Length: 149
View 1 (cartoon, rainbow, N blue to C red):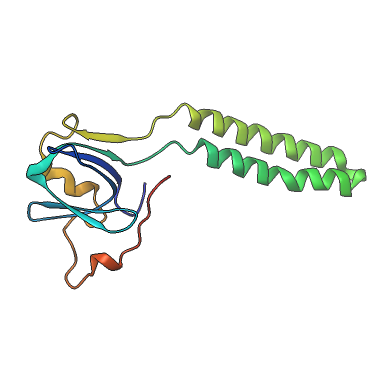
View 2: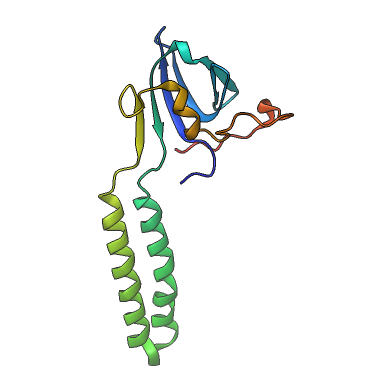
């Protein structure tokens, strides 16, 4: 789970699309941290919204497997007397990482939508970085985005 707010894609009743990190619900307004600034969208003007809470991480698992296999490959070349042991280590790493990547590639990320799973917009604060609302004294314009690509 992202320790920050979930990634949000919403459309207003005027068909304007807003994309970014869900920060907080302040009274009747959803604050979304976009690439450049903080967007404020009235809950009354939200036509639909999708919160992407978790994503498939198969690409990260594949990269980790490749990186963790490198020492075994170096060991095979550098220590020819123990090449069998290093080859076994490499096979275990590739097998375990490959299996984890395969399992992860079949998993779908957790997505909540309105209308859909979310019935009442007043409950969307649980998907925000600040689910209890903005802390006092915080300057939202100084926050850095943590958007998922």
